[in-house]
Each structure stands twice: as C-alpha cells, then as structure tokens.
Image (cartoon, rainbow, N blue to C red; front, side, top):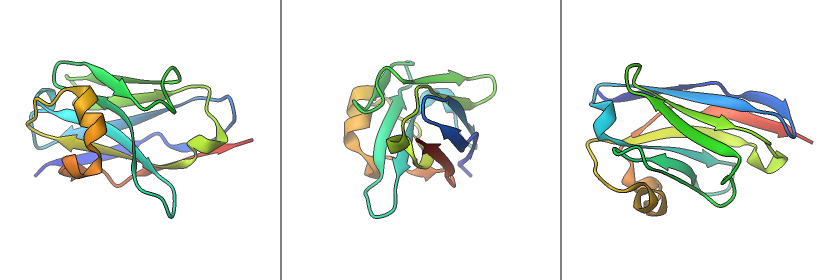
Length: 129
C-alpha cells in the first residue's frame, strides 16, 4: 500500500522558515514524481513544487526563490525548505506522489492535483504578519 506521511508544519512569523518532510512507503521512491500542494479553505489545491524521477525540480511563481525541494532516497523522504515565509503562504500543505512516473517536473507541476494518485494527510502552515 502506497502511503505518504507529512510532518514539520507549524506557526511562524513572516520572514521565518519551516521545513516540511514527507516520508513515503509502499513504492519505489526514486521512480516517482513527488510534489507539494497547498490549499486554503474555499480555494482549489495549488501546486507549489515538484521533483521528478531525474531529480529535476519545478516551482510555482509564488514560491520560486523562497522554497527548495530536496530528497533523501535512502530515507524515502522528500523535504520542502520554506524560507522568507509570507502570510499568504498560510495553508494546509499536502505531499503527493505519482509512482511510477517519468513525467518531467515542469509538466507535472502544470498537470495539477488530478495527476497524483497518492496523498498525505496534510500539515498546517500558518504565517503571521
């Protein structure tokens, strides 16, 4: 059974940093496309960052230059380092995976939430001004 478990959310002041983690099980981590989405009540789930099976990354314009993806294949864990956080980054953050997949990161980011078959339970990030 494919499963994703997120951690690392919390509350910070504007300008602060958080690191989210997503640990995967039940599939070949390195042969997948993995992503972080975020959602606020009343809005659609928004793709934030994607990493493909070659390690290429893609970011939404709203987080480019502030958020950084990395992964540890030995731990089957994906990380999202979030710096210079803004109040508009406040949302529930979800880890998602599509495995196996060879889709390039840029294409996977544009594809949206429907592309991903496995989702974590979400972790809340709150940024105060």
